[in-house]
Length: 101
Image 1 (tube, rainbow, N blue to C red):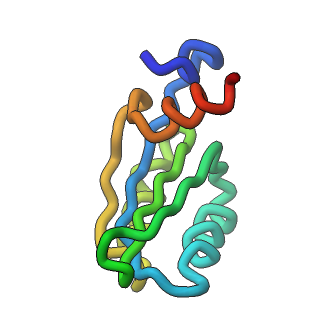
Image 2: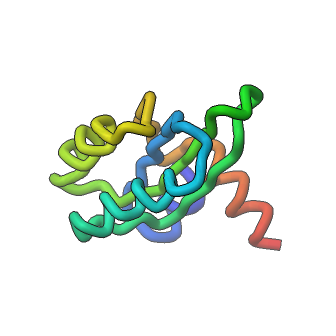
């Protein structure tokens, strides 16, 4: 169990997106979540080795709407892939540990 899950008592899955690396992509993704009133607890974005693409990790809440939001995210033109990870995904656990000091 991740330290975030232990502290809050709630499951926070991580969505990993492969997206086109250009201005406005993050705005489109955040806009989709905002229009559906779906909160993101954390966002991390890094360019991939091929600079045409970026990887975005979203720490989100687990609820009944998540599957629908994932399907809608997959339909965005700039999104090539969406993977869902468990709350124990290393990206946010490592960041939390880094900033805890």
